[in-house]
Length: 301
Image 1: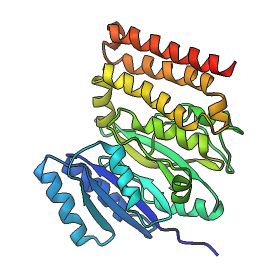
Image 2 (image 1 turned 135 degrees about the horizontal axis):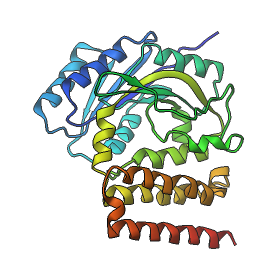
Image 3 (image 1 turned 90 degrees about the vertical axis):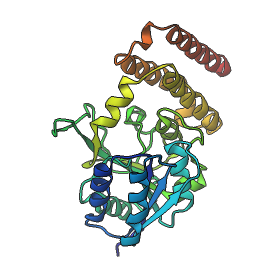
């Protein structure tokens, strides 16, 4: 007999466009599977209209709760607080300017029914372009027909490092002490992604497209790529390694190759949208990254 898992949907919010918020909430309200709660975490929004809207919405929608933070530490901290206050068995993170397709929660519940000891599942996205067209960004899709892990399928290490478009077993997150860093970091999802890959034993990668990401978020982030954001990415790797180095997991034991394969490619790609590669900070970062690799190599000897 199938279970109806309760989903805790956590949405960090900071000054989000009202039209985007409404579309996000409406896509949740129209889900074909309805056993869920929504935790809105207001990360100290400065826009009065945003704060007013998200504080009024739960008054007319009983599945919604609002947590107003006294100061902003970024989306990672907001998500942590959402998890701490959740009552569901499955955690789903959504960015407040994105939206879901109607069967998203149904697919998550059905997959956890089929594989009850699953740690997390991931599904596909499309990007809503400013032109209104939907774009499929995935070139090399990773799909699994049964639960697996990065040791059995190393291709998992090259998957999209986002926390949205996933469903997490709350027990898996709590038992493995997986939390975002409290400080506001660019690409804080990367740090989290490394932790879940290293600690997960049973993961599913689905081909279903269930999440729509707005182009506006990515385009702004790319155009503003700078030294701080580049160093934040580097620190995501170094801080995550500190957390997993004693796990004796496939990822911790092969972190040198993982870092080589992914870090330099990320910096190279993001630098195409700015002049970062022409700065002294770029040279300093690459030197620090190579020094980090040398330390890892010497530690293995």
